[in-house]
Amino acid sequence: MKASELRSVLSKNINKDDSIFFFGKTKRSSVMILVVDDEDNLSLLFEVRSQFVKQPGEICFPGGRVEKDDGTTLVTAIRETQEELGIDKEKIELVGKLGDLVFASNHVISAYVGIVKKSDIDKGLMDKEEVEDLLIVPLEYLKTAVPDEMHYNVHARWDREVTDSLKKYRDNYHGTIIDKRRIISYDYKEHTIWGITARILEIFLKNTDVNYHK
Image 1 (tube, helix red, strand yellow):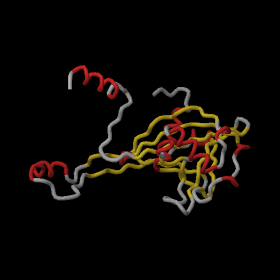
Image 2 (tube, helix red, strand yellow; image 1 turned 90 degrees about the horizontal axis):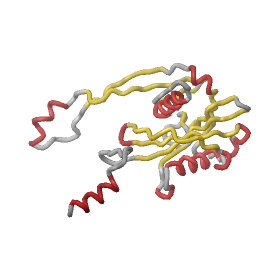
Image 3 (cartoon, rainbow, N blue to C red; image 1 turned 60 degrees about the vertical axis):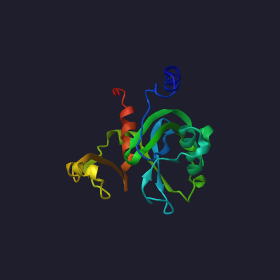
């Protein structure tokens, strides 16, 4: 390969400020943060997961895994919202993309924000196989709520016997703390919003503050 050929190939692939490299398989998902507009009284819409899916009873945003035919993460967010809630995409006013959020295990979630009129929400249209109920929480309540917070440590563990060349390094890391993670949760009535949903919510709420600067 000549220098000119190398330059041509690399110029197409590496001059991207948003390039992120992952070790291992990557899981891509999208969610839609739906702001419910009830004559300027704003709320956020969450789903209560049904008993027929993983993590039943937990609170989440509409969304799901990116499918091959979606093309973009925005298409995924809109498609999943339509499938789960039965809301026509024409009824969703897209505000923009909150960002790509990288979580443990190479899980990347693209979060979008949309506005929907309360009159366009119909529980009778939601997919009962995936959604048990809807939870609508006033935005002003969330903006003043103080989340509960806790931390835990992630320790290094070798999952098998290592090669001779690595044995001299094993004891330097085995059992050591390799990461400290934060868990937050928001309580609303009898419900608790926690985990990834709470982290996305926290980022969204920061971005609703007119004095917030990234």
